[in-house]
Amino acid sequence: METNDKEEYEGQVPEVVKNEPDDKPAGKGIMWAIAIAVVILAIIYFVFFKNDVGFD
Image (cartoon, rainbow, N blue to C red; front, side, top):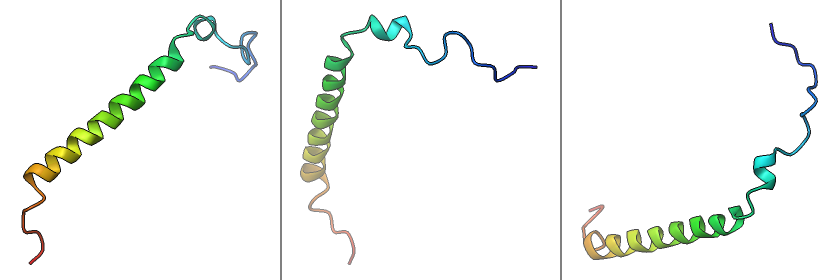
């Protein structure tokens, strides 16, 4: 049975986190990818679906 005792490493930052300085630019890349996807989906909507008759 496991206990909830505090381990020696608990509360410390793992070494993997300290050794990954490139995470911030990757986060900016994700935001750009989301923005580009939204723009592309908006263009597809306005080209193909904007003129459809919706609720008549």
